[in-house]
Length: 321
Ligand SMILES: [Mn+2]
Image (cartoon, rainbow, N blue to C red; front, side):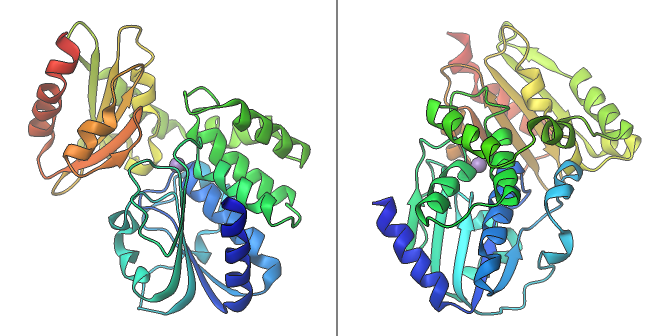
């Protein structure tokens, strides 16, 4: 199955002149790693390649992507071939959504189980830890060389989407593939330092402030906090730079669901994580969001206080049992 898709994609690449690679808004490590891995893999084909990612690249990923190659404003340019990576639905393309109708063929490569397949070719495997892991399978099937540079980018995608190989999406296959990436030259500790141990002090201060305003509900089973504009301004930090609060809250023993509310001008973005059996993507879907059972997110057209009330109420029945 996958083999046939890869064959078809290779012939599409060969016959295309203008190729676009798009990822999702508010890009994470899997998005950036996958997009850049494919970009670097395609370089030897000598095509015109355009990158579309809407939103700020978090500082710890800037080593892996040259921001100058990302399209700033989209002017309805046409493409022969479009790859959409790690993007569960078309809305997640943000300001670049129109690229879909301006591309002859769209190839969707993703691991979100909520992805309904909006491309002409849809390679969606929800059992994969990350889009990067899936992309690695695809690149291997081309039987072309995988450079160290590409291996590093795939590794970045897998590392970040598995929470350093700790989430339940991490399989023995994930580890086998990661071992192959290390054999291709990935320096594990160097990447760990770039991604996790290189934060500016103000970003860590914003993180601490956010964590310290945590509220615990339902016998500590729900941990919730908010990243407000005030908190960010006080620390001179950007929303996109302060990462990992929602995972940190989950470190509390009793916490089953952790939540971080992010304050924007006209809405609140909700990030959810689950530790065990609660499927947070079910709540996310109800509010037209996306994600997985253990990590999901959506947007509410509410202020922080109302959003908090809604989330607390939403998990009442699930956590009071
Ligand atoms: Mn992903």
